[in-house]
Image 1 (cartoon, rainbow, N blue to C red):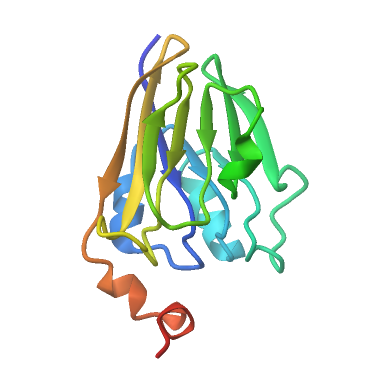
Image 2: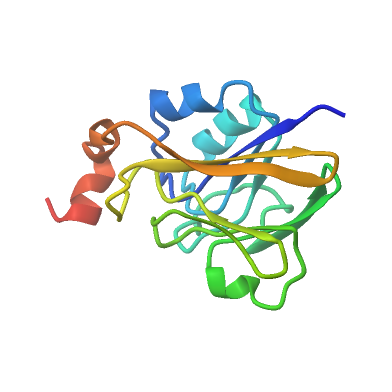
Length: 170
C-alpha cells in the first residue's frame, strides 16, 4: 500500500487563494471542517480530489448535498475520521483522526489514546501568530505516518477580499 496525502482546510469563507489551490495539487483527499460558504469553492475542491466536508456556523445558505452535515464520519484507508466545526463536538466520539475548525487557530496534537486531533486554522482569516495555515496528513497501512500544519504566505491576498471588512472592521 502506498502513502496517501490528506490536505485539511477550514474556515475558507468563500476565498480560495491560488497558493491554497497550488498546495492542494496532488492530494488524495481533501477534508474541510466547515465555513466553506461557497458552492463554487465546493465544486472547485471536489474537482481537485475527493472531498469530505462538514457544515460550519456560516454554511447556512449553500447547497452541498445530503452527505454534508454538522458532523461527518467516514473511513479512509482503514482510519476512522470525525469532522465537525466545533472541537467540543468531538468529545466522546471514537475516531482515529478528529478534525475541527471555527477558531481559525491551528492545532495538531496526539491525544492520550493515540488519536490525532487537528484544526488546520484558516488560510483566509487567521487568528494566530502562525498566520494563514492549512493541515496535511499522510496515512499508510491504516496509520497516520505524519501530520503537520502548513504555513502559507502572508494572506494579504485573501484578507483584501469581501471578508476583510466583515472580520477586521474596515
